[in-house]
Structure formats: C-alpha cells, structure tokens
Length: 439
Ligand code: PMP
Image (cartoon, rainbow, N blue to C red; front, side):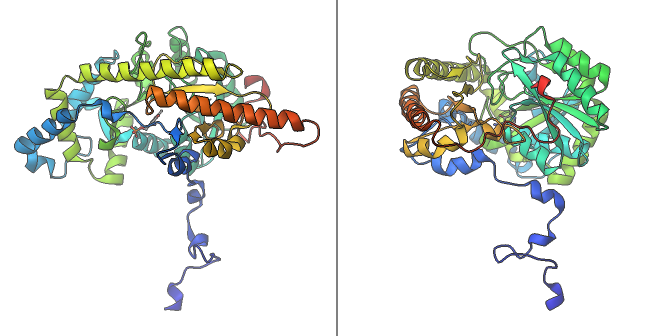
C-alpha cells in the first residue's frame, strides 16, 4: 500500500501539500469571506458583505412562482437541461437586458451559475499563466480571486470620479506590450462599481470601447448592478457600443435573489460557442429547477415593480449612510454612488484599514478593508462600506461605532507619532503594476 501514499513533502495538516497543481496556490480565502464569520454575529453591524436585502421581496411572490412552476413544469424542472440554459429563460434574460438598452437574441446568451461562474469561464478560456488582465484599481474581490487562480497578471488602472481614464488605459496596454506581455482582456465594472461605487461617464464609454477595439483588446463588462440606480438611469452598457468586442456579464443575484445562482454571459458568436463547451465541461447543465422557477417568476410577477422596490430600499440606505458619514466622520472622504451597494471611503494618511479592523470588530462594526480589492494587497488607506443589507437605523449605529474606531485609532497614532513606528505601508505595487504616473 505504501506506494499509494502521496509523494513529496506534505505537512501533518495536509499530507497532499506537495501534490497540488501550481494553480492551486492561487486559491486562498478572500478577506471578505474571512470576515463573514465574524460579521454574522448578531451584535455586529456589518457594513462588510455585499448581500442583497432579499427580505424586500414579498415571500408570497416567490412561493406562488414555486407552486405554479411545480404544477406545470415539474418533470422538466427536475431533469437535466440544455448546457446553454433553458431557452425560455434566455428569452426573458433578453427582455431584462433590453431595460438597459442591450439588443441581443436568446441565442447570444449563455447562462451560468451566477455571474461568478461566467468570470471563471471567461478567464479559463483566455488566460495562460502570466497573461495580463487589466482591471480597475480597486476591483471586485471575487474576480481577483479567479484571476489569481488562473495565474493571470493583474494590472490595475486608476479611476477618478468618472471611472476609468481612457488615456491611462491606452498607455497601460502599450506599456504592457512593450514589456513583451500579452494583454488578454480588460475586466471592468463600469456601472455602480464594486467596490468603488463609481460609474463610467457617458462621454468616456465610447472612448474606452474605441481604444480597446483599435488595440485589439477584448472587454469583459461585469454589470450586476446596472438596474439598481437611485437618481437617474446610468449610461448604456459598453456592450451596446461594440457587441463584437465585449463579453457582457449579467446576473439575477441583485435584481432578484442570489440564492438561485443564475447569471449569464452575452458574447460574440465564436466566444459564446466556447463558453457553452466550457460550462458543459464544468457542470453539464445548469439548474433546470432554478431556470424554470425564474422563468415563471418573470412571466407572472411584475418584476419591474420589484426592481423599483429594491431601488427605493437601497436609495434610502445610501442616503442614511451618506448622512451618517457626514455627521460622524467628516474627517474622511467618500463618494456618493448613484446606484449599487457600496460607498468607497478614504482614510487619513496615518490609518490602515486592515490593521484597524480588529479594533472595529471589538466595537461591533465590520467593514471590508481596501486591501482585498487590489491584486497586490495595496489599498490600506481605503475601505468599502456596504449599505445594502443593514437597515437605515443600523447604518447610523454602525457609522457611529466606526467613528469611535477611526477617531480612537487616530488619537493613538498621533499620540505616539515620532516615538512608535507603524508597520510599513504597502503602497508599492507588485509586478505588473502600472508605472507611477498611471496610478
Ligand atoms: N461581479 C460583481 C461586480 C459582483 O459584485 C458580484 C457579487 N458580489 C458578482 C460579480 C458575482 O455575483 P453572482 O455570482 O451572484 O451573480
């Protein structure tokens, strides 16, 4: 039997350690995930996770859709389905996307297990180890995790209040090419960015698309929040400007419920064919049950009215968060998102969001340190606050607690300034970072 034991050196904890594929070294628990355990204690006000407030959906709407679906579709709903996704659902996805101005046909749509799986499949299709993915800095932590697991080199591009800067994008592509690297795609969240809360302006959208078209760089547009606007509808998705150059990702997670795990990709024909093969290889077929259920929900429930209810809930929470920040933390900086779930907060020079977190948890408030949103762990002077889940009253309490933490930490740091040296800042970007003038 001894020749069946793992080869190489393992540890007591994991005797298989030496046998993993190299890409498995990129699999590490995200900071957000580690936080969930702490932040889910009821006494903690969590401004950390990005969980949609699903209680805003009347339970009877979902129960009714489940009942009707089981009465009419049970045999098909309990069976394997098409790898590309239930045709009836893909027709509805086309209707949902039309709300944002996208003109697609059901054939263009590939359903996925949440848009997270779409990110994984696209990365699997395009990335060899060392290939460059351009992404906003900061960027979505779940996408960065995928990119790392495929050994991509993530190059962050800075944003301003209007999102990605077209000139910076072009310079970064050329810079990477001059270093002999292959730029495979731009991963972007142009609308109600996670975590930055920003939206790419209407004026910049065609310029970003044109730059990528001219330089032959594919765009992966991740848009789970586009329908959740508060004050005015955002500009149309990048996909509408060049359907042949964009893989567009959508999801029911924020506009319906993440528990169903249904998202989708819309891609140019050839890429779509590959995506179908990749998803079949990963999961054979998506959940027929959930596809039938969501189709039933979309056909029989006024889902537009439900999305509008979500907007009202999140608008009120955003307002509560901005007001509380103004009241209790006027010494910080933040943006005012017009949709989505997040406010991105800048801390004073002396503070470090990751180092401050244990103190925050002791004060019963949780947030996500900025460090999770950069591939190289920079972002210590930033944090993400989510307003989607806690009630306005809890947001008020949470920000009040956060003020105690921030001001307490500041007092401490300032009292010891000059006598105690803090841990070194991680402002140095790792390999693959844009040059200093692009940050
Ligand atoms: N992209 C972004 C920008 C997100 O914020 C999320 C969820 N937080 C996802 C993708 C994944 O969403 P899902 O898999 O639930 O569709």
